[in-house]
Length: 232
Image (cartoon, rainbow, N blue to C red; front, top):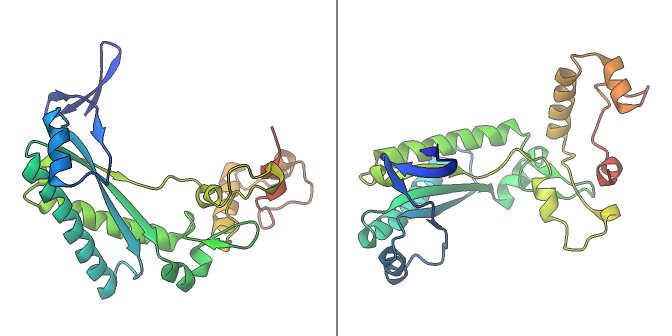
């Protein structure tokens, strides 16, 4: 639990104040390394749980992927607790798509302005179902383990940013006029147009006034890379 105490933000676990110092070095998971940090009072640990999705979550192959995913995570957590038995653990769940998944569902990938396809679109209902299934299975698994009392939270990685993968596609120093940003996939365009209908209460004249374009409609409105590249 996070509380405000005397104007400062404090972290409490089981009602006890815990220093908000989180060990996040994934390379430091050896017994010796964990022990060294535990000696100096590290109580809160971040354990990364990375899964690369190949099979659909509700398929037998997808369930097998989760079984292997959980086994690896269990080994990490139990190894940590053998050396630091009073550790509190924040599980960082990182679930990403494999190239095979993206190739199988190209309409659900992020499409950059130059035509490249990357990972998945955060507007994809298929990918949303994948995450709901996988994160739900992970949460139930952690709660059922004998170490469940040490889990203080789960950090589900991925923000609702349609430009997430586009940013990674730009090399440092890329000129503004060449920056790739935004998702131009069909699934995202449909989601964007649906959002516009809600934003402007299905009033096309209000949309046209806001966009300063008398010809735009909810069926034709799309993100424009040149507009996104402009300086404010």
